[in-house]
Amino acid sequence: MKFEIVRDQLLDALNDVMKAISQKVANPILTGIKIEVDEKGMTMTGSDSDITIRTFLPVEKDGEQVIRVFKKGNIVLQAKVFSEIVRKLPTNDVMIEVEDGLQTHIRSGKSDFKLIGTDAEEYPILPDVNNENYFSLPSDLMKSIIRETVFAVSQQETRPILTGVHWEVTDEELVCVATDSHRLARRLTTPEKMPSESFSFVIPGKSLQELNKVLPDNTETVEIVITDQQVLFKTRNVLFYSRLLEGNYPDTSRLIPDEYKTSITVNGRSLLQAIDRASLLAREERNNIVRFSATGGNSIDISSNSPEVGKVEETVEAIGITGDDLSISFSAKYMMDALRAIDGQDVLIQFTGAMRPFILKSVDDDTILQLILPVRTY
Image (cartoon, rainbow, N blue to C red; front, side, top):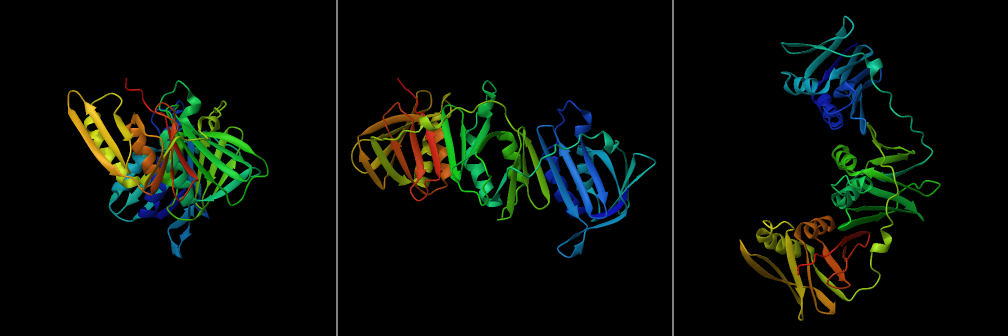
């Protein structure tokens, strides 16, 4: 194998693949990156067995030649060492050559590194994913769906299924739900191309967080292909495979109330900032609890009390309040996460009582719903 490549392009592709690399893997070869070169360009693959990322860099990009292939071939190189070398090479022209079996030369300017590679034939074969069951979404919408749901997955492994986001296609709609049993985030959307049959699967939250870093910030189409144990996200030059979580996701639809006693409309950003300030005194407490009261008038009282630290009270003007008076306590962190997901728009908050779950959604967009369980403080 012998080829010349533009360092900046190599580094961009390498940064994506490195997101799949872990030092804690059962198979030592997975601490390496598989590099394959042919007349079309270079393919790099990284995997930790839970997620696999494959990037393709064509010989020409935007009319400019980025790779010159002298001899096709493949090799596996230690990922951490290889990425550090590429990052610190002195010039933008890089020559990579494998000779004497596995001896790999990386030359740039007056630098000449020699790495001992591993036979690419030993690298695990990627799962075979057929394209029968797939749909597509724009990349920027995919990133929004991840941002609006993934924070609510459980961080505890006691119920592994809750560490993922449940994706379900029914009645021409994609429903994405995450819950840790104390809060819930739900996002509805309609994919461009729907699969022929209904389906549901659970993607690990960690996989989605890494996918979010790889996806471009534009409207490029992302194809989502589903099999029994894997999901594949395909963009023009990146393939992102993730294992799926096994088990049945709980029916969360019954958690969402269908009638409310108190409804409050408020500017999301103003409420977020007030709760953030109130939480300054609540952070020392284990649960970071803030109290929220609407008892007449058109304003909300936000307060927090920590016996060791002090007390804070703040009034936030509401856009509208209807229904019963209300005093409720909740986790400041959960409330701020939910408000950030709705992203500063005017927010409708609907309550069914001081100890019942309450929901938040945008006044202008009911595709995003956040649900939070209150906290008993007496």
